[in-house]
Length: 413
Image 1 (tube, one colour):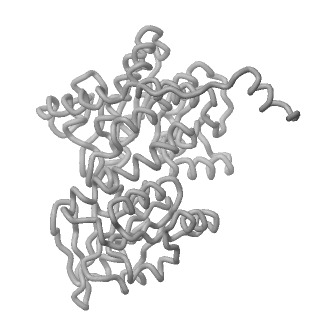
Image 2: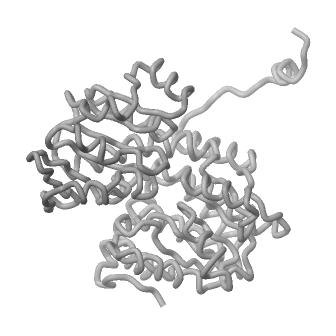
Image 3: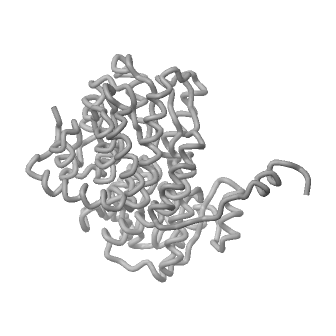
């Protein structure tokens, strides 16, 4: 039985789902094949990904392939109540309520896992944590799962090293069809969509500090520069720092960047990136935003402890007033700004990411003998998605001739 805030919101949610389905042609092609072949017949799939329209579309595609789908969110602030109601009205068991506290969020995850899934699609590793712990009794029929995001894969690698994986897992985030486009172009656009919509402020002319220059950070920095910002990058990896430098960005430690920035965006996947010593030297009215999966990159608790008071300045903006009168503005409680304050990645981007999820889930059920370890997405899945996406966009590329293939596979000139 679904748990959503208000089923009267279902019509609005269905409109959102219908809209994105019009712009996700690769997933649409997979859906048509799934409907004919029924690869998931008799299988239960638990999906924990940000519960908004694109995710609901993925759930529908899996459902059309014969699966019983049990859908929940992966962050309390990214769940959209109308989409949750819309998904439930379309026959998907849905467990999602916007804005629940940590205890309520975990309860919804546990409700989802009561189905005893054969396959899980996880985003950040919360389902895996429960299946390896409090919900171990729900893992009896698990064949495997897919992980959507960088942070989740870091957690899976640590579990694999410790021998603590509850089932075989596939690192979907590491697929070229996912991280090349979703992380760079999806994050780059959706972060600024969220910030601009929430603040109603200009980006041009501001100094933007981007913490982390992985694929996501590259996208955030690129879009900020494109809108006229002066961009500073902070990093711990010397190669990524050199890459940022050669792409024309200033690079320095956060301690040096803290007094200079007007807008700060953390995209590291690590904790304690911006802390009280940085708050102490920041400008009045800076904007603090996080685009990493968990709300640990900006030390919100430390900021709250420093403040003499805090208050809601606009929806999704909390102003923290310090003893010297400066106000620091935290967006979306320090949670994923592109989802807590926006609609997430564009539909065309998630078309590729969720195509990887759908085809990888199919690969798992067709390979029920997998070892309990972390797998890469098979190269043929990656290549197929890229080809389908190009065709859907009306684009063509060259192909190698037999002579070129022979040349590239040999050593003779």
